[in-house]
Length: 165
Image (cartoon, rainbow, N blue to C red; front, top):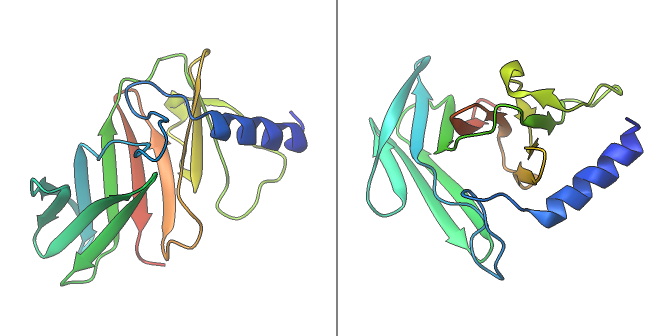
């Protein structure tokens, strides 16, 4: 697939933002539900944070706040110790035949393609999932002061925020 065609297709799919059970497009409403799980990484180990009942998560000196503002959602992180990363997970049954497309960390060399879920590929900054009928698009705004990547699995969608950068 030519890169220009891929970019046009990606932009069109991003504008559509159709993905049942996870997102909905409705004026200034939030386009994505709050994550079902939040994890933090300190001292080389991932540990699950507990929901605080107010849209945030916390534990072991780490606090993750999820705040909706219009049609965007912000992730706010505070830690009392060195923090290596935060992982947000959404429970979602992705069709076995679904294909995933994403970018590369540096730049692509003409090898961007739709891949199956089994690849488990990290998709930096944005990810597109096509189930044969609809294409869902997930992304982060530029300038988040962290390296971010998406991963789609059979049972969930993950966003990892690498705070080492």
